[in-house]
Structure formats: structure tokens, C-alpha cells
Picture 1 (cartoon, one colour):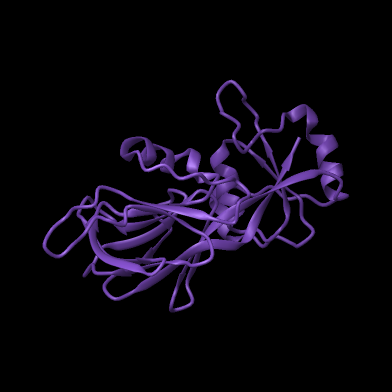
Picture 2 (tube, rainbow, N blue to C red):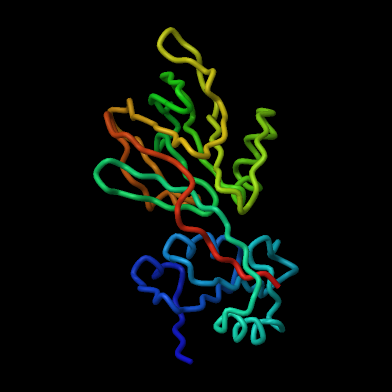
Length: 232
């Protein structure tokens, strides 16, 4: 066996091999952070402090790690194929997220954009929008659903994602009808109407953003990649 220890801050510079088995030890967010850099490798989420961490994604106790690590390398484990969210821009830029992708303004200013989904379109002004997977539907998306009563059912392995618009503002130039929806076969398109300050970021990592200023368009959909999460 060869092994390497990689810290969270070095993930974007580390090259994972196709036959690697990844052991994520820490909070649930670490699994989300590493997921975007993988392409089918099995992930074991280990909870080092069950009294402090919820263990939604890090569900494996340290005592079971040795057995599951060997079984994972042999391909003899049960795994969930967790759906991820993908954002694609016309210039070839791509962003992946396990939980959600945010599209909006980097400050407290309103975000202005055009939204298109399922043959409908409208211009909006809002506090931005998020596109979440079934995994992410238990986090930020859940808070929005509880506040707005715009419920969407998303399975963790369902090839679908949902979108929610945050605090849309009606005016003579903007509408508020397209506030939430499920994305399956047809993607969601957002076109920026912001002169500056528009951003797209994944899983709450604001500093790792893609600029989204006037005229840029992003295509949001379920990703072709999935997180293969080992279950105990």
C-alpha cells in the first residue's frame, strides 16, 4: 500500500489516481470539498469525534476503518452514488459541487440576471439563487425551503437537482414567478445582467469563485460525475 496525507488547502493541487481509495477524516464538509476533485474513486468518510460532528457524510467510526479500507480496495463494499451539481460556462469553465452552487452578487447588492428553465424565462432581481443536489437539500436549501415553503423532493442518488431563488424582488423590469424548480433532463440557464460583482461558487467556498459579470451565461444541471460514498 502507498499512502499520502493531503490537507484541505492542498486538494486543488493534488492529483488523484484512478485506483486510489480516499479516506476523509473530519467534518462532513471535508467530503464535499474532496468530491469535486474525484472521478469515481471510493470515499470513506470517517468521523473522528461523533460527539461534535453530525456524521451525515462522515459516518464511519475509526474502529471500522481498517476492515472497510481493505474491502474498498477490493471493490467489495456497498456504495452510494451521490448526485453532484455542475455549472458550465461558454468559455469552458466548469464548477462541481456535492451540496450546492450559488449564483449571485459577491456583496449584499441585488443580483440581476435572466433565468431560463423548461421553456420559461424571466428577468429577476434577487439575493441570488442556489442549485442543490439531494445531499445539499438537507443544508442551505433546507433553510430556504423552510423560509419560503417552496418544497422540492430530491433523492441523494436521484439524477436531478433543484433551484431556489432567494428573496426575488418584483418591479416593472423584473418578475418573481420562477422561484423554485427541479432540474432533470433540461438544464437551467442563467445569464448575468450585473456590470460587476457577479460570482458563482460551490459548497460555500466563496473565495474559489468564477466571475459572472454582464453577458456571461451559465448552464446548471446534474453532473455526469457522482460521489461514490462507502456505506457501513
